[in-house]
Image 1 (spheres, one colour):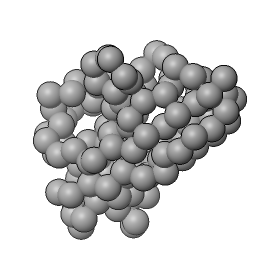
Image 2 (cartoon, rainbow, N blue to C red):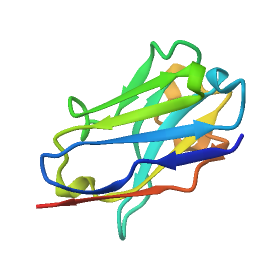
Image 3 (cartoon, helix red, strand yellow):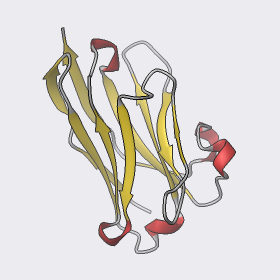
Length: 126
């Protein structure tokens, strides 16, 4: 599965961005998709994830709950991350990842994801 993350950019605090993760795989709907980020000097961390098929199950890091929303459009083989009320501490490279065998309770675990996109930079200025 090849993943392409896009939609990053530079915004001021309080602004919004929508990231997209597009896949080449026609059965993309059968994959759970997660968003992770790596800020300068920090480890990669979980941001949000959506389970496979309808995507009725989602998970969020506490730091983004209420501000970020993950969704999927299976007809377009794309998963979105809508980011609102952005803060300078959201500045990072954002990666999307996919896994075929992830259970709902493990959506936040980085080890469960088998395929990774190249990352897209998000910069939030104060």
